[in-house]
Length: 174
Length: 153
Image (cartoon, rainbow over all chains, first blue to last red; front, side, top):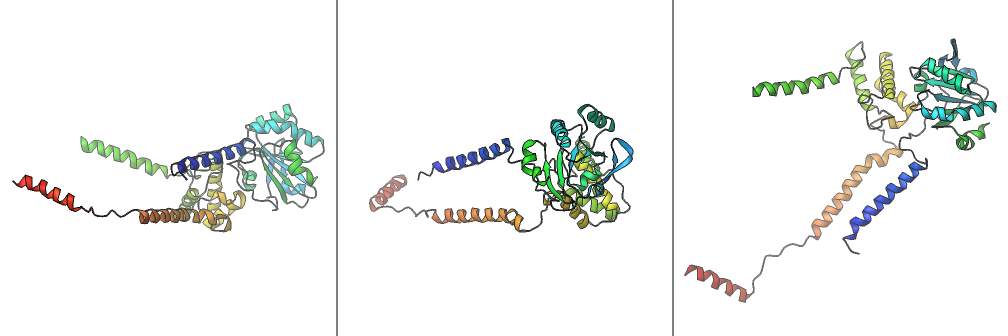
C-alpha cells in the first residue's frame, strides 16, 4: 500500500467519526451534555417546599405515596418548559397527577404563567434556592421524573416532554 | 523607573492571585475553609462541564458552592460531601473519577497511548539503516591522491 495514503485514510476515518457523532446529536440520540442518570430505583428524596399558589401551604413528596406520579421541574425562564406546557396540560386532563417544582423563578412570573397557560399541576413547590432541585440532582430544566406507588424513582427524563417520550418512557407505568 | 514599572507589574499579578481565592462564604475555622476550597476545585460544574464549580459563575455552580458550604458548616467531612454530590449527579461531577471497571479505560488510556507511541518509536529507530562509512574504490583513491598532491606542489 502506498504509504502516502495513510494520513488521508486517518483523516477520512476521523471525519467519518465526527459526522456520525454530529448526526446522532442532530437526531437527539446523543447529547454530549448528558450525564448518566443517578437516583433511578432509589427513593425519591424528601422535599418540603412552599406552595407556589398558597405560601401558607407546603408541598411534600411524602404526600404522594400510594400511586404513581410525575414530578416536573420547570421555570418561566426555560423555553422548553413553555414548549412542553400544552402537553403537560393534556396529560393532566388524562388524569395523570403531576407535581411541579418551580425552579429559580420569580413567584409573580410563575403564577402569571400558570394563569395564562393553564395549570397542569396538582401542586407546585416553589424552589428559588434549588433546595429540592439539588436533592434531585437536577441541573437543567425541564426535567421530569416518574415516581411509583412505593416512592421509587423509575424514570428520569431531561428535556421536553412530548408524545414520543411519553409513549416510550412513561406510559408503561400507568 | 525600570524597577518601578516592574514592581507595579508584579503587584498587579500577585494581587489578582490573592483576590481570586477570597470566597463569599465565612467559616468557623481554617480547616473548614480548606475543605471547602479543595472541594470547589474538584467538583465539576455540570452545565459548563469543563470548569470546576470554583471557576464557574453559572447559577448551578453557585448552588453547588452554597450547598458545599452548607455541608461543610454542618461538620461534614470532605468524603461525605463528595459522596453527597456523586449520589445526586453521578461520578461525572468529580474531576478525579474513582478507579472502577467503567473508568479503567479512562485511567489506563494515557499509558496505553504512551506504550503504542514507544512501540512505534523503537520500531522506527531499529529499522533505520545504519550509514556505512564511505568506501573508496582504488581508482577513486588514486584520483583523490592526485588532487591532494596538486595542492602540495
